[in-house]
Length: 283
Image 1 (tube, rainbow, N blue to C red):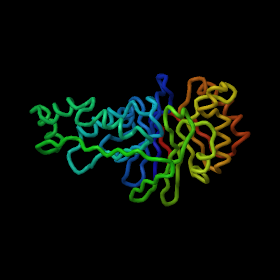
Image 2 (image 1 turned 90 degrees about the vertical axis):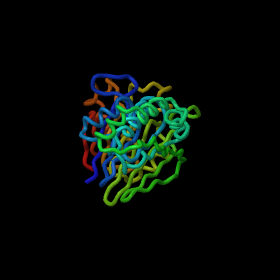
Image 3 (image 1 turned 135 degrees about the horizontal axis):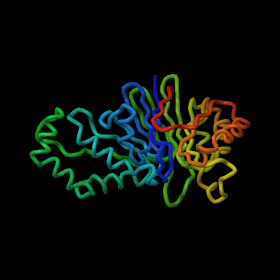
């Protein structure tokens, strides 16, 4: 049965319990990630997973609390691949391709690290000890900019994206939906209420919504780019989702979750989960 791992359920402000946004989705033999926030690689390992198992990464947008863990994931994954794993396949809004090249290309930020690990004898020994062979290959990059409506197909699943409305025109934002035989999950990413996300999430099994604040605490300026709890409940109701999972939680919302939950239940009668990091949900 597919499993959703909540690895990052917080915001750009680190707390002892939450930091950034990252989810991992196991569908059959495939392990997918949605966003790659701070400490994503370490949280992945804490969840009993490992970077070399991750074959697919989908970005909603390129705020740092959603992509700061990307360099670490790519570097650790490449360093521990021994052959046959293939490159990490990365999809997201622009500038996903450009960001990947600037980090990992031949003249990218980590070019010296790659050269040292490819050429130094001690790195050769580490690579051989892990089961690799020489000569050690360099990184192979597979990153693609996508647009609303694009489709990505796995062996037993599909991923589709739609436009979200967050901080345009400075960043382009997407929502993602994954479908497989017998189930589905959609990720709103950071967004204000918008019809494109609702259309993508229609009749979804689980809606994962970024929702940092109780509705009564949502300043009008913030309401132009993010959900409050009432917005998330209404989105789940209007999309006819079976379950609503809230991530991107602030400490104030965590403290007020009981009151917020009571308010949300007046709008939406499905299951509501305020996600904790390293929790796992059967899909």
